[in-house]
Amino acid sequence: MFRKYPLFVFLLLLTLETASAKVVECRVLTEGTQLCNPYSKKLIRAKEVTYENDRKKLIVAKTLPVPPKKPSPPRPSMEDMIEKYVKIEDSMRFRGSGISPLQEEAKKEEAKKEEIYSRMEIIKRKRQELFDKMKKAKEEREKEEKRQEALRLAEEKKQKALEAEEKKRLKALKQKEEQRKQYGVYQVQKGDSLSRIAAKFNVGTKALKTLNELKDVSTLRVGKKLLIPLSRKRVDAIVKAEVIVEKGDSLSSIAKDFNLSTKEIIALNGLKKNTAIRIGQKIRLPLPHAVKKKRFAKIKKRKKRNRSKLIRPFGKRKLRVTATAYSSHGRQTDKTPFLAAWNNRLRPGMKVIAVSRDMLTKYGMRNGTKVRIAGLSGIYRVRDKMNKRYKKRIDIYMGVDRRRALRWGRRSVVIYW
Image (cartoon, rainbow, N blue to C red; front, side):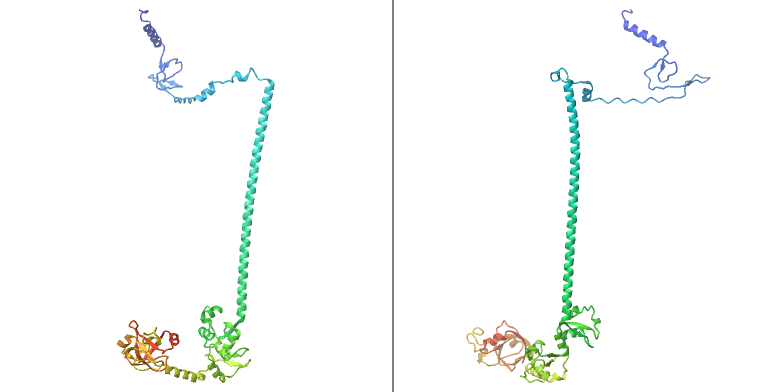
């Protein structure tokens, strides 16, 4: 039977042997324990075990934690395993049987040379780095010097420009001061205003205000001296209303210079018409601010009388029209230059006008109407009529004097009828 089931007998003996030994669970280990159950879930190690008096109960005084699981070492790569376990040796074919002392000495010399060469390379590299650093510092210094030079030149240029501008300003001020010295001076009198003074010397009010630096006209007071943008000689002549005759002067030149009439100068100074003037002679000027009104009352009255003759009203109606002139020429009339409308015959020297059609229909004129033209002497008669395209217009007959007609041109006049 034992020969027939040997495995069974072996297992039975093993089971009896283990049953005879005292087996405890590995969770509880006490002193004297030699065997435990290896299939325990938790390992508990007790230092002290006590029992109660009445009941035999296992009491664990102190337990220790299960030691931590050690991490598994990393798996080495193939390259690491080859480097660690595979040893590659030189081929005997090229190595020879062995290394001689000379070769060993040469190898040491070569190693020394390589070391020296490497040190020299390091020195060269450091030297090159130092050289590059110095070069960079030099370039930066040169760049900074150039920038400083450019700033200096710009500052010098700006300073020169300011100096030139200052010189120009001083020169302008000097010229202005010299010009001011050449200007005449007028002292403000009672009743004067800036506009009256400007009219007296025939200058602009704004120019006078700017020259004297007047911000407010209220600063103009009696006794204040004003600069006049005229020569001193002319200002004195206008203020005194007299001029001293110099070489080359004549009554007509003096009158033209002061915008006066020669007749007025002759009348004021009591001179005859063809009287010659001499150098150094004082000629009084009939300026408005210096001449009394009574002295020229007769002259003004005479002028007014002559003017009233020219523009004296005539008839009951008056109208401002455009006046042109024409003559008896084919280009200005037609094939019959001496034959007007209504079969009127024209002769040079006749005072005849042609009127526009609206003057006949709208304003009541007809053939033979007497008309007076302001600015022309005599009475004109309506003897011709103009083209339909003209409105409020008259055409004055100048005979055969074509030049006189062209010289008349076109004017605005007032007519009375």
